[in-house]
Length: 284
Image (cartoon, helix red, strand yellow):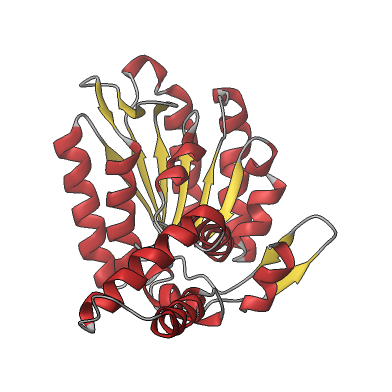
């Protein structure tokens, strides 16, 4: 469902969640808050909450192995909240403290994408690391979205805030089965969230502005006109032939509902888009 306000639009949909996969890669000296949160999460799990799977990551090989295991489990029905507890930077992405290795945003988004495909777009990702929101700059309209719901800070974030809010976030998720409202009431004070439908909407807007308007559009049109004439064996087209081909190409490149229909199945991993092209036109 899509709804409008004066300044934004809001998406809502169904999400399956049945476990918490907590991945941490911190120096031993900084593990105190993580251990306290995990102990409390185990208490929630024992009282009927989601099971908690803890993964300690030392290096890149271990991280890839863990995501491969989660992906295999997702193919059998696992629908986790993946919580990444580590350090991050704008340029280098995820820091694996034990080994000192850096995992770039592109590599991390590839691991998340495979997992989200296996969950059939039911993955929630909480990146509890500084600048985690920068990961979504690497999202491609032509590839599957890396998570149904993605939560991360746009800049630095304090350990104290995470320790204060994280347990309450998961408690509310378990109690209400509403991840977005739980986030807004807790972690949302220091993080941002991105919904796959909203990300699809934004990606389409960027695509239209980049490829369907102005100089880039004119260049595309001329390339396609040349290709069509060559395909049809027309070396010296008449003015009428050139006019007809250009008109046909312009119509084919005009953005519309077919643009949503083209990208939605792969980007949203089988989910339908919650909006129509008329909704996009309101923002264009």
